[in-house]
Image 1 (cartoon, one colour):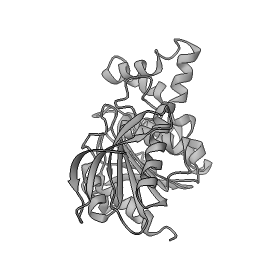
Image 2 (cartoon, rainbow, N blue to C red; image 1 turned 90 degrees about the vertical axis):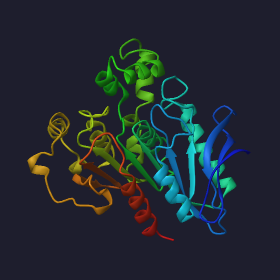
Image 3 (tube, one colour; image 1 turned 120 degrees about the vertical axis):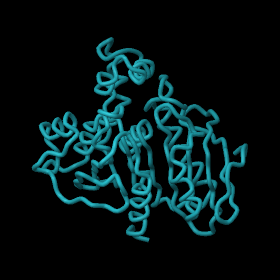
Image 4 (cartoon, rainbow, N blue to C red; image 1 turned 135 degrees about the vertical axis):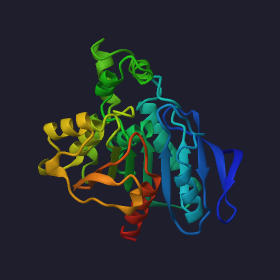
Length: 307
């Protein structure tokens, strides 16, 4: 491990550091920001994934990092090949192994409670959260995904002619239909190809702002379809309901009910459904994360887990 830059101090003077770790993907050294609380007792680990165009230095999720440092939980913010605009990034096998190796590094470096490893991300980070939930459900006790992409082919069609559309093409090697290999890359990099593996195995906290896709870049159909992959058949949201949600940015009348949740503040839930080990929440907002709600969910999950 190489300690590079001192970034901040925890409540008891512990360091928040820029580190390198060895990835099992290709034996390369990868970067991450890491907080080791140096606890004598095993503590939870929160892994936060940067957004689509970000990297490990991004400060987007700083409230979660500060909360971890104050609470004495370990915190890890890996790079996983940087922005999602090339084949080596964007849900690749390299990315998956980088994130697994980052968690392994934290477990070897700090006293981590292996039954309390959480994953959080927004937008491109939420997309990678869903990828990791499906590819490695055994690692996570909880995955909190916000404003997530679940189907790259569908998102390409929604982003065609825009910056993110170009990023998807660079990552997958072409547009859908260009070749069998290009189409395979779209499937291999899409969470919907794997999410069913997470059903009942990991707590999933899927969130989207109802205006996303109208004032933001990811239609909420992606989150609703992700939920359907991990829900019991009777609890799935119908195609007609998903279309209504997405096109009108409204909750269908038949699905409206009181879903108040203080942790969401001004971004109150408008629709919530739970099934198996997953919950989907559509809240009053756009392309964003409500960080106090993500924190409250992780804390409650940890407090109610068997010790």
